[in-house]
Image 1: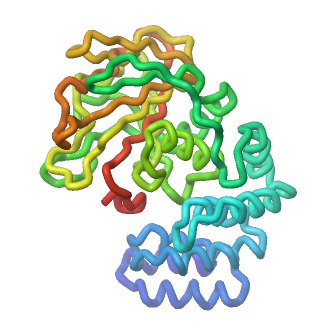
Image 2 (image 1 turned 90 degrees about the horizontal axis):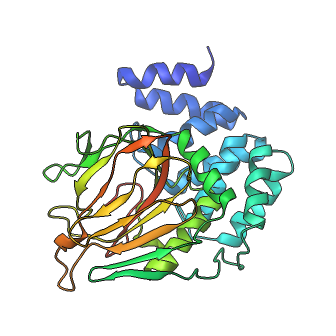
Length: 320
């Protein structure tokens, strides 16, 4: 039995120390899959305590041996600063190296090169126009290119599951009939440089630091699916959602408008466009006029990306 398979059999039975020792020994002997499994455990924090610094080192060792997924994950963590300082130039250098042998990395690099970014991964701030002043709602006609939209939709299709909402009592994400779409969050281990560059753009238009944003979430609404009238503020949250960004990733469907009933505003989705709106009043309390709904899709499928922006930095690994 391979060391990884043996360790995966041991851990659920409570033999965690033995499983870790087995993987550590195998990794020291050059077993790249053992190194990767240890890294995943250190990132998730479910089998052993989360240790992002140790995970980065394990990924580096696995990437040097030739593990493609380890290389891509190391690039993501290098860019977003998990387990070390955020270093965009170093992450780009790692991507260029990986792209020589990995078609996935090469595709990311081509898209990244087309994004016209500066040395730190920032693009020129796009222009928007105001739909409402209180609460502020701004529409950005050209936030993402068609290639960027398609990339995010493809990435989202790999992580989709039934969408959830945050339970105000437990703080956990739970299913709820108010939201009937499919969604997937692009967590820090999957935040490749394309996603990171998009998140930097969203930080720029919101006027908040990139660290204040929750992981980018991709959603798909099929016919009949919707997000009923709701507010994006989290009941009782100490670190509240100040802004929401909605990015429309495709056209070619009917229905699916974003509706603000208290403001009399209905936004028809157009691929590449986005809206940014405030969730709170000046006193920090939720603004009830920011209630909105994703109306039912009639035909086709609606793809959307959203990022909730908090008042203070949020840990993307724990959302605290």
